[in-house]
Structure formats: C-alpha cells, structure tokens
Amino acid sequence: MRRSLALVSAAVTSMVALAFLIPLALMVKEIARDRALADAERQAGSLAPALAITTDRTELERAVASTQAGAAGRMAIHVPAGSPAPNGDAPRKASSAGARGAGSTVGTSHARQGDLATATARGRAFSAPAPGGYVLLQPVALDQDRTAIVEVYLPRQDLARGVRAAWITLTLVAAVLVAGSVVVADRLGSRVVGSARTLARAATALGGGDLRTRIDPQGPPELREAGRAFNTMADRVEQLLAAERELIADLSHRLRTPLTAMRLNAAALGPEPAAEQTRLAVTRLEEEVDKIIRSARKPKETSRCDAAEVLRDRMAFWSALAEDQERGCELIGAEQSVAVPVPRAELSAVLDSLLGNVFRHTPEGTAFAVTLHAGAGLVGILVADAGPGISDPEAALRRGSSGGGSTGLGLDIARRMAEAIGGDVRIDRSALGGAQVQIWLPTTPKRPRRGRRP
Image 1 (cartoon, rainbow, N blue to C red):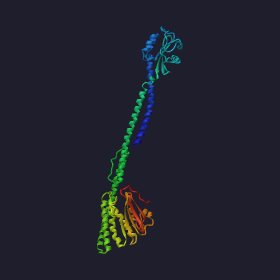
Image 2 (cartoon, rainbow, N blue to C red; image 1 turned 180 degrees about the vertical axis):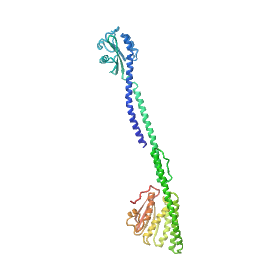
Image 3 (tube, rainbow, N blue to C red; image 1 turned 90 degrees about the horizontal axis):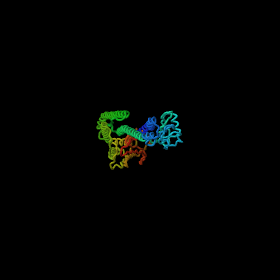
C-alpha cells in the first residue's frame, strides 16, 4: 500500500508539475527574447539625438562605438543619400554603395536590403531574422523627408540569455515537489499500514484464544472505527464465553443432587461385584463433574498431557470390566511418554467414549486393543475391536454415528477434539476383524480444520 500511494502521488504531482512547467518554460523563453529586443530598441533609440544633429560619418562612428552593441560590432546606421558625408569616400564595413544604393552605412551590418526597405516603409521598429540571430531595425526621421535606419544585431545566445538557468531552476523545483509529495504519501501510507497491521495482529491473537486482546484505535477515521468495532466484538465474545462457562458450571452443580442419590443407593447394594462396579462408575462420574466445574470456572487455555499415561490409566479402568465380560484387551506402544496438546480430562473423556462404544455395541467376549503411535510431529491413537465393524465409515463420520444403534457421541467428541488442534479422525477395518477408530493429533497445535459434516 505504501508503494502504491507513493507511485500514485509521484504520478499525479509529476503531471501537475508538467502542466505548469511547460507553459512557464515557454514564457521564460519569450520573456528573455522580449528583454533582449527591448534592450536593443533602447540602444537604437539612444542614437536618435546624434542623427538629429549630424550625419557626419566620424561623429556617427563615435556615437555607435559609445553603445554596448556598437562596441561589440553589432550595430550599424544606414544613412540615406543626400546627407552630408565629409568622409563619404571612406570604405564601408558591411556593404558597397552599389549594394545600398546612394546611401552609406556606418558600422557592421547584418540586415538584408529588403528588410531595410520594409523598415523605411513602415516607419516603426521591427525585428527580422538574420544569419545567426535577429536584427532590430529602428527608423529615425531626418530632414527633407529622409529616414535613417539604426540596426542592432542580436545573436541567438543573447535572445536565450538566462533561459537555461531558469529551466534548470524550474526542473529542480518540480523535482523537489515530486519528492516531497512522495515522502508525504509514504508517511500517510505508513500510518495507514501500521494501523491495519496492528488490527490484524490483534485479530490473530484473539483467534488464537487471547480474549484479553484489545487495541488503541489509531489511523484514519475508517480504521479507528474498525478498531472500536474490534474491541466491541472482543468484549462480546469474552462475555459470551463467560456466560457459557457459567451455564456449564451451573448445569454441573445441578447434577450433584442426583449423583449424591446414586452414590447413596450404590453404597447400599452390598459387596457383590456388580455393586462394586456401580460404585466405581458413580465415583468416576463425580470426578468428571468436578473437573467440568473447575474447567468452566477458568478461561480456556491450551494445555498438554502425556497420552501414554492417559492410555495406561483408562485401560486399567476398563480392564476390570473387560475381565468380567471375558474380553481380551491389549495396550500397545504406551511404554514411553508422548506429549499431545490436549487437556488430560478431554483425552480421557474421548477414550472413555470410544471404549464405552466397544462395550455397548459388541458382544461379550469380543477382544479389543488400543495402540499409541508416535511419529514425526504426529501422534496416533488407534482403538480397534474384533466386532462386526462399521458398514459405512464415511457416513458414520459425516453424521457422527458409529452404527449399531449408537448415538455417535464417542466419534463426535473425538472428532471435535482432533479438529480443534488441526488433527483428524478416521475409521478403518482393524487387524482384529472389526472397526478401528484412528485419532491423529499434531504435536503442535495448528489452525483448526473445518468440520467434515455438510
């Protein structure tokens, strides 16, 4: 944007400068020419008193030499025939008597005979082209209806004296104007771009989860208005998320009463294995409700956990039920620590949902296995079983259903968790013969992917 503004400013200023410079340059040239002609006319007019007194050649030569143009050999006097000329038989410098008629010429002449005749006929000064420049011909009336012509020769360099310096000055002024406009446009562009970049950085930070991000609106009125709108939006988002957390916490608190009743009822069931399993499930449910309340009371923050430790913990929990149902279970690849950018409670909930689906939708005695695969920048959690499998995996992922009458809650929770950090969920046929749910998580959170549901 800064470069575009600078180029536009330079182009516009250049066009404006040219629109003024070209006429000014021509005017300067014309003024210089008029000044030279006026000076020549003044010098020619200074000889009129001498011609009114005498036409003596010696006196006229002295009068011509007293002028600036005459001293430079650029002035001549054309005296008509019949004028006294004591030194009339002296040689002329410019032309012979045959060339000028019966008159005489004092000084060096550059004018053509036709121009002299025209000046005599007009009776007023005029300029005419001559070799290497111009001549100014000034008629001076004498007695007996005779007219002398005073000639001043102007070389071309005199007509253009000072023009080059004036043109250079005008060009420099135009260059300074263009450069100044570019600097001003660049400063303006810097101000606009700086404000836009500040707004973009704030939007990126807000999208990354920093709900405290606000900006100080600066720049042009439009960007200041956009900055104020951004702050309003950020306040609203923060309020909505806070309200959502309060709602979740309130709902969790409401669950405590029925959970308490369930725990009391489970305590009265006796020492049977089924009763013990019920009491463990109620205790686990109370722990999860407590975790929901704690997480809802604080802002959402990115956290990490050890996937291997979580898998070992959840497999130890479900292995007791698997033993009761005579299911074979195996945990593979969870010997070493593997960090993933997912909260422990969230990963535990996903594993519990997927393993719960195995127990609900496969016959007793069906084996299952959980495998942890750690690769370069990617971690895979594979939950496989030896059940009937899922007939249409793609449809199951699109609608969030795992088939067999399931509500699809496990798949939906797993997909949301994975896509929130740039991962994904796949369903395939397992080596055990049933379904295999694959959860792939990046080791570093990435931009969330779009949901796969239409």
